[in-house]
Each structure stands twice: as C-alpha cells, then as structure tokens.
Length: 291
Image (cartoon, rainbow, N blue to C red; front, side, top):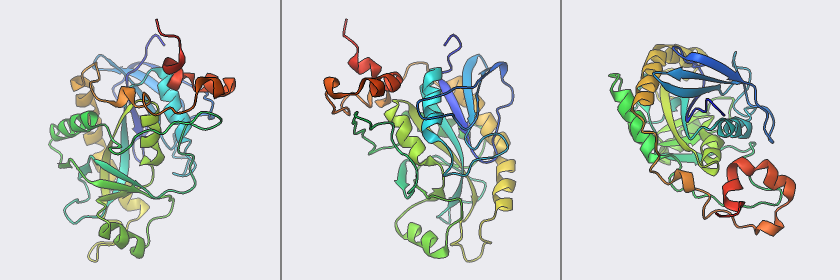
C-alpha cells in the first residue's frame, strides 16, 4: 500500500486511539480469518506512518476470548506492518512490580484454552520457534522509550496469559506465583505467537494495574481499579510510543523476518491451492520462483 506503516500499536484496555496522528486514513480490511476487531487507523506521527488497532474494538466490545487475534495480526500484515507494540493491562504477581509500573516481559506462558492460535493448518504445516516469544530488539527499544518518560519500568518477567474474562481465584494466583510468573494478563496469547508466524517483531508494554488477588494487604482486582490506573498511565504510554517511533531504525536486524525460513514442513506440491492463496502474504516469498 502507498502509505504502508511499518510500526503498529495494538491498544488494549484503556487505550483506544493515538492522539497526534496526522494524515489519517481508516482501513476496513477483510482477511481469510474474518474481520479484525476494528478498522485499522493509519496516520503519521513525527514523520513516521503508524497503524493503530483497538484490540477489543472501540467501546470495548470484545472479551479477551472473542478477540479475532488471527484477523487482527493478518490485517496488520496486509498493511505492511513489520513491528507490533502491544499495550496491555496486567496484574502483578510480584511484590516489587507495583500498580502504576510498566513491565516489558521477556517470557510468556500460555494458559488459554479456547482460542485459535495458528495461521497454519488446512494442508500447510509450519512449526515456528518461540523459545523467546518476544523480539528482544523491540523490547529493548520499548524499555528505553518508557524510561525516557521518567516512568518506572521493569525490563523482564514472565507473563502468564489466562482465558478470562473473569479474574483469578486466589488458588490460581498463588500457583502462578509459585511457578515464577511475574505478571498476568488475558490477551498476549496467541497474539505473540501469531506475530511470530507472520514474521513480525512483537513486544509488550504491560501496565500493572493491580496485585491480582494474591496480596493479603491489597484489595482484590476490580474493573474500577484497572481503569483508574490505566487512565493515569495513558499519558506515559502515548509519550513512549512517540519516542519509540522517533528512535526505531528502519531496518530490522533481528531474526523475526526469517521466522518461517526453517518452519514450513509441507511439500509445495501437497499444499492445497486455496490455502496457499490465502496465506500468500505470510508464506508467498518461500514458494515463488527464485530469480
């Protein structure tokens, strides 16, 4: 597309738009996996084209389990996006990760059950590597951008994604703590894995809104608590995104752009034509004749 954005922000609870965008266009896209949560908004921020997608839809219409993660990521791929920054709310499972802090996790544990979690199937098999599920280069850039705002940020921690939409029981929360999880959320899985399959860099700016339900001296998490902290942190998120857009290099030097190079196992002649056509934006470069 003529105004292809290479950077996208997926806004979660509390962030439904990016202020300061100019030359804005809205893209109401369709994908082989259905419609995204909302039209993608593309605009210019400090000279850089950026896409924004509201994960839960404007007005927060979709539960974490109802979000069409495949359509969201695929739509951003169609726009030309190479890097995705996820803005998410999370609960803390550590005493030192306090409400109001920001965490850029370096690991992910998937406890979801009811979500399609791969683009592949229907005659095309690929086993993508996710030992390190987040792009280290993008994560480091987010940490630097958040630090430059003066906010308190943590540059590591394992994030456990639960199905939702309910909050945890105390037994669940304490179990995740015993497992060594640092934060808990409802949307990073399968989003991170789909981004890797799409050969896109992906990292999370997680805003700690509460101590989940494990903390004996703090009130259990509520929607009011989550919204209040997110509203307080909105200015930090927007300032960090602006600084990130200014600082990110154009070229990617990480391994994300080649994530599928050793992942596809199905022989070309065995792949149904319809599947290959649908997934061409993801795999086409591996099956076109070499010049």
